[in-house]
Image 1 (cartoon, rainbow, N blue to C red):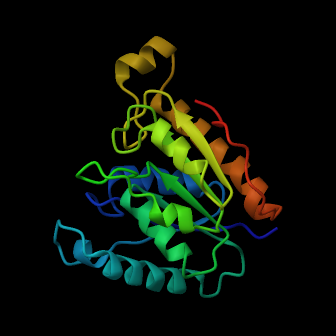
Image 2 (cartoon, rainbow, N blue to C red):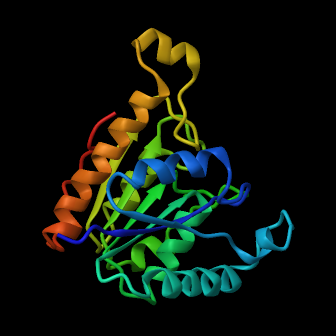
Length: 211
């Protein structure tokens, strides 16, 4: 069976070479081939993200380059903004699935940015922390209830926007951050088994897949 290709996009504040991105690239490499990308503003040394059309165009170009010579399914994975832009790309490009690692459901002004999610037809997995102010889980669940695409949710108990749990909480649970991320990776693998490897396009179970 051909392993999937993950096109891994960063969040707004860090490049693909950040420690977080390198760590998650290594995680996903256990499940498939991983190709990271950077957006034009980051390549130019700027801190402020480009406008949405520029981000989408760059993401689509990276997708075309990454899938050249790869015969397997393509999964768009992304941290925060990278996941949101991946959702926009999936409206224009045929991909097998989307994995959003900390989806920024709320904008800087607190507005709910759900339009692109409601337009999706591609299966999407949200990996979300309970302490992520940019994506309150109750708001996400309401949006998921309106989606036409299949969706799944993996909850990281105590996780922030980067899916990281505080040291005290980890110590109280007798866990490490590696344990937290291993469970998240296992949830991604289950999602791929359901929607990429076996190919069903039906609606996923509505409840969380675990902490």
